[in-house]
Length: 206
Image (cartoon, rainbow, N blue to C red; front, side):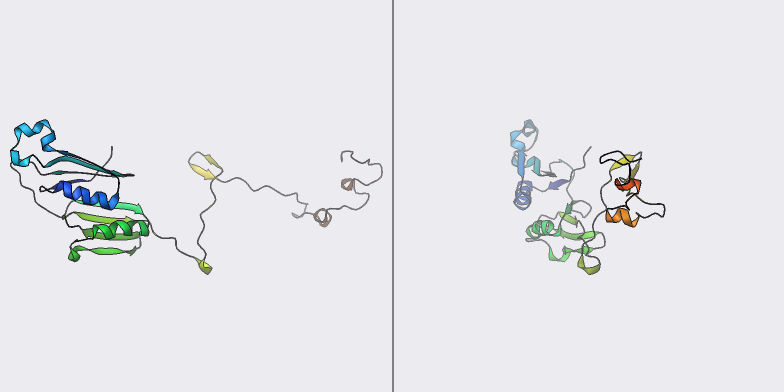
């Protein structure tokens, strides 16, 4: 299942959706009452009203229609809105500024950093509320460097993530490689040097 915002307008659905397309891009499909069989059961003055509008832009989808209920009356409230998330500040700023044209300045909260990320809110010129929430910026750590993420897991055991073991180096009995091994040589006569008496070149070590 998928949850999609659905908006109702009082006869200006087509204008509103065309405006949102100019802000968000994408493809807009509009079906008017006169193009459907429902026209026969509705008054002629409703023929130009939109019965279904769908705007798709990337992963964003917005569905809307004009109010057509014969007895109920539309009431503009503040309990329905559009939630635009997961963008960077720069991406959200472009959309925010376009939607803010002719918006109510008393109901506008400009984009700003919050503990959970970027946040903003406005009510556009059609009375629709927009809420913005973006990804938090990368925070610099000591010395101005950006904290790096942990290395990816090499293998997974059950639900736990285990990293590949670090290759072991040859060690001596003291836990460190002997000085001769670190220098790349062994004393003459040591079986590991390959130069002791009775050890031919290329012969396997004992």
